[in-house]
Length: 108
Image (cartoon, one colour):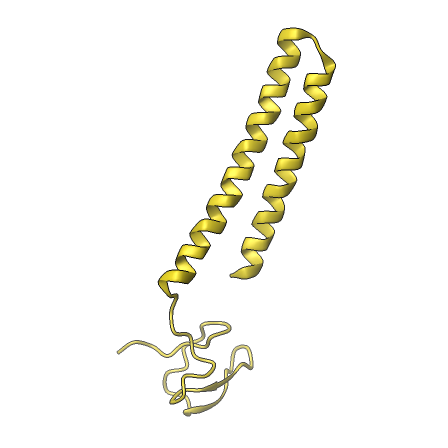
């Protein structure tokens, strides 16, 4: 038999009364109506999580590529502005990647 889990903290509610509060987090549940009960992730929720994770990885990789490219161009041409541009754009992409990661964790 599949365990009945709290929707907030995933505490196993098996063996508890049909209506009550989760002993772990206090979340109100009603087993027969499915309120406060974890129903598992839908395919749409999993797909959204994958898209958010890919977005974060893409921003991170792009930020690193721009930082490295700016450094290489600066070393090859001795132009300080190439390094500063790479540092600015790459740094901005890394900040966006961090914000994407923070948002991704918040939404879980």
